[in-house]
Image (cartoon, rainbow, N blue to C red; front, side, top):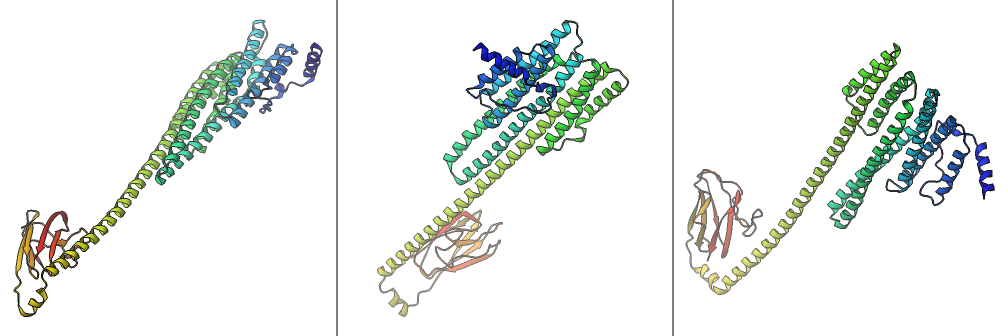
Length: 446
C-alpha cells in the first residue's frame, strides 16, 4: 500500500502547479455530493505532502481554494442551495485561504519579505473570488425569476378558481422564498470568510501595492454594480456614486503624489461608500419588485371584482326572468279564474254600459299616497307628482316592467306632471318608482 502511495505522490510531483498561472476557474471534478469525494481529498493531501517549498505550498492552497469555488458553482447550478455539499465546499475553501495566510505570516516571522508572495496569492484568487460572487448572484436571479413565475401562475389559478392548484403553487413559492433567504445567508457567510482571510494576506503587501489594488478593485466594483443594476432594469440615480467618485478621485491624487498610506485610507473610504451604494440599489430593486407585485395583486383583485359583478348580474337577470314568468303565469291564472267566476261578464258588456272611473295617486315625500288602490276593471289610475323631486311609475319588476306590459310612464315626472293608465286586466298589480325601486305601490283590479 505504501508503495502505491509513493508512486502516486511521485506522479503528483511531476504535475505542474496550475496556481502559478491561475486566471480562470478550474474544473470542479468530484464534488462533496459524490461518494468518491474522499479520493479528491486524498489526492490534494498527497500533493500538499510532497510540496516542500513554503511559497509553493501557499500557491497550492490557492489552487485548492479555486477548485472549491468551482465545486460550489456546480452544486448550486445542479443541486440548489439546499445541497449539503455546499457547506463542505465552503468550509474547505475557508480552510485553504486560512492555510495560505498562515504560511505568509510564518514566512514574515522568519524575517522574509513576503510582500511579493502576498500580492501573487491575492492576484491568483481574484478570478475565483469574482466567479464565486457571480455564481451567488446568478443563482439568486434565477430563483427570483422562478418566484415571479410562480406568483403569476398563482394569480391565474385563483382567477380560474382552481384552489388545489393555488395551494400546490403556494407551497412551491414558499420553498423558493426559503431558498432565496438561505442563499443570502450562505453568501454573507462566504463573503465574511473571504474578507477575514483575504485581509490577512493583503496586510502583508507593501503599502503601494495594496493601495493600488484597492483603487483598481473599486473601479471594477462600480462597473459590476452598474451592470447588475442594468440586468435588473434599475436605473441608478446620477448622484448615487457622487461620494464614491469623490473619495476615489482623492485616493488617485494621493497615490500619484506618492502618499500611499493616504491613498489607501481614501480608497477604503471609497470602498465603504460603494458598499452603501450597492445596498441602496438593491433596495431600489426590491421596491420595484414590490411595486410590480402590488400592481399585479390590484389587477387581480379588480378582475375578481369584475368577474363577481358579472356573475351576480347574470344571476340577477336569470332570477328576474324567472320571477317575470312566474308573475305572468299567476296573472293569467287569476284572469282565467275571474272570467270563470263571471260567466256572463261578456254578455253583460254587450247590453250594459259600465261607466269607468279615474282614481288619483299622489307622489309626495318619497312615497305613493295611497300606496294601495282598489278599482274596477276598465278604471283609470292617474299618478300626479306633488314632490320637489321626480318619479317614474312603472309596473314591477325593476327594471324590466313586464308584469303588466304597457304599464310604464317611460319617463320621469317633474313636480305637477301626471301619468295615467287604464287597467283592463283583473289582478293585483304591483308597481314601483323606477328612479327609486324601494318606493312601491299596488293596484288591485276587481
